[in-house]
Length: 162
Image 1: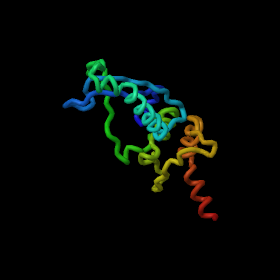
Image 2: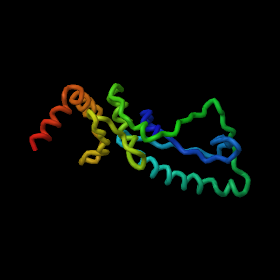
Image 3: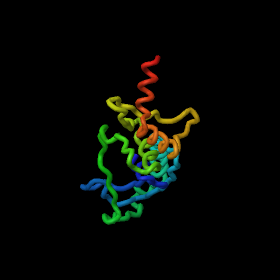
Image 4: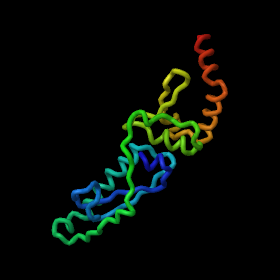
């Protein structure tokens, strides 16, 4: 999820030995994969599941017979991310359009959805449109303009007329 929020184009998986630290054991193998502009966390998780099986199958024999090459991790190259809470899904409309788009497509099930407020109403992200792709940053720019320029009032007026 953080890979999508950060706008990364690649991510990866690492097979490593466990030790006393958190993800600090010697590296056995690593594999990278591409992140597209429409990937969502479920797709990344599916990719990681496939790659996890492949990386284990490729290395299991050398692990079992003790011939695997161990690469000590360089702590200076480590990256960390903080655990997210549901309230972290609040959309910051002051960010750039591409950042808003990445944030919204990253904060979808299986995680709590991204959300915003229209007055006192909490609105959750609708995930994908019917073409099975995310709205572009231009869509988010238009929505932000609409919200800042009385969009909520027009919705409320329309609701009252129904």
